[in-house]
Image 1 (cartoon, rainbow, N blue to C red):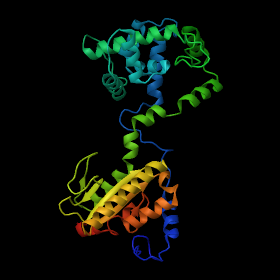
Image 2 (cartoon, rainbow, N blue to C red):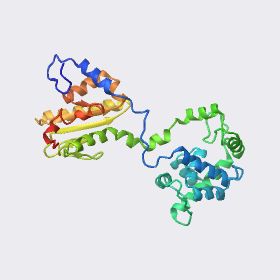
Image 3 (cartoon, one colour):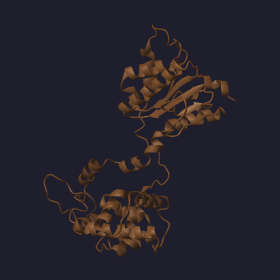
Image 4 (cartoon, helix red, strand yellow):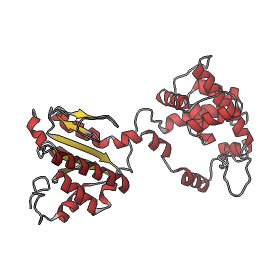
Amino acid sequence: MPSRFEADFSDPKLRYDDFIDEVFGELKSKFIEMPKGEGFIDYPTFEHGYQTLKKTTDAFTTITPEAIQAAVEAAPIAFIVFRTILGFTPPEWANVTSTIGLLEIDQGPARAIDRSIRLKPLAQRSLGTKLTDQRIRAMIDAGVQTLLQGAQTRLSTVIHRLDKVDTRDGLRSLQPLADLGVPYAALLYERFLGRPFATHRDSVSELVGAVVEGAVKDVLTAAKVEFRETNRAERIQGFDQAPDFIIPSEFNPVALIEAKLTEDDGTARDKVTRVQRLRALRDESKQTYDVIACIAGRGFKVRREDMRRLLHATDGKVFTLTTMPLLVEHTRIREYKVR
């Protein structure tokens, strides 16, 4: 049996099932691994911030803005440790600060502060009079006020964001846990509510999605093939939706590539529809360029009919991370290969 890259997909008797099984066998879920990305905080760095915060607050018996600020100046990562104790995202902390009325802070600056600290978590800094420093101090003040109040809502139909094992009753909750540790069941329950690695996964979501695009670029660059990578929502003449890659350019294409990693079958179906649209545009314009799909993730192996549509629209030119090294040789891209 010929490979899917060599089969005649205009043959009405062609057996798709073998090719579908082949592609499904190559697709692997990527959710279990994540890129660290720039600004990843390892545990020793995080613990350094925690120990600094514990020291300046006298083992969390003196929670004052001055004590928290001293920790942040000595080890900026302490700012993120304090945010973790509160259980807020950067935008949520900014919103609390604005609501209290200490200083109006938007989401953008809050995220920028968080990122700058993650990039230089242990670089000592002095909080002066710059606007960023004023925002940090205001967020610290608001955080201290919020923490000392604890979870005040007692309605059975809502849960307060501070209704956590370490902040429910303010310092009375925090101090014993700092001395004795957290019961494992309590840790597991709060992990259940918050999902492990959720914040980090959100921060590197674009890097996760770029795995396939990166693999495509590596293969094309290794073969010294010129290509045009389009930007999100970019308008390209002749296309109602621009493909992810055009080889060598939109002025004389020999290949179009749609690239996607997804664990969600709905997103996968949307990408299949986009590939079908590219094929329809090619046929309507009587062009001869290849329409190619480069895919990864569990989402593409949920519906067999979707994979059948994808194979038909690309004449079998569906490449996974496993078969990506074959991309150049089994498509018209080989016409532009230098080596």
